[in-house]
Image (tube, rainbow, N blue to C red):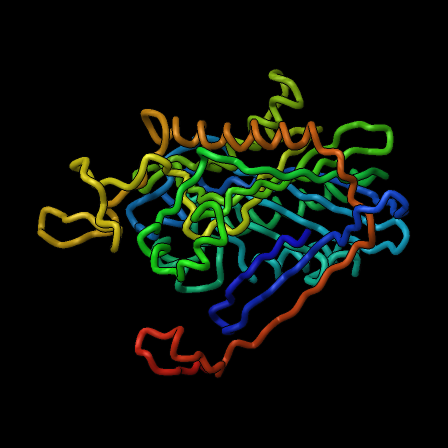
Length: 388
């Protein structure tokens, strides 16, 4: 099991590649013991007058709350080797090197060398309805008119607090895994382009998007439930580019519902003890808007360019909006989130394969300067070299 995150650090032209995993063997005779800890913390930024991250539209600014954003951390320690991994899934659009610099610095001030770049993965669930301006990179901060320190500090401190809570909650326990195919919750937003793939490649897959969900079940040695982690590929765009309310979108709702289901209807959101992380994976062209993409006049968007013709006669991508199930974007968020929650709970309740084996992790910074790109991957048909 290898969750993988790529974070492009534009200002240094590096790619930060983190691979953190539990190497497991399905072996009845294998002996391995873990300590597991889970934590949750609020990372909701300014709910008014800050541009939203994801759609790239300067006019889409926060003006209230749909529901709060949270960070959910899981720590797994191999008792035999004392090696630990930290996986954090967040109701954020993306995560950046700037965040990791500060997160690792704060954690090392508190715990020494226990946590660092090599064993921490911080992942975004890709909601497009959270406040922007939390990177050190101009490209991503343009539409938010610069860096917003208040939002950045809220996110960084929230993630550190979630990890600290998971650290404090470490108990001996076990991990079970299950997976299955979730339908009616995603479509390809670029089936036109997908059709240009070699037919042999297309024939290798049942669907034109990955519809597999993987769930990890965490419990202590007494059988008490600690929480779950789920991976399923679908964009956080059930809330469209007209939305101005902060929202964790469909994955945020899935986590909210699952935690309510497990902790009881009278439980306070974000307070546990059962913690459910609905992490993102290979979402590429995977859309939650299962009805399709349409223009304001009700006609389908151009399948080639995903545009609609504006009043000025120009093709505009911002006029093309994905439509999900239900009557409103709030319905769509709830329905797609509910699909993920229900399926994850079923996989969780029926998980029987226990993970065993050593904890292992790998981390590398890769210099992407002056790399030759072959002609098959350029728009000019000629080979090129990346920037210096």
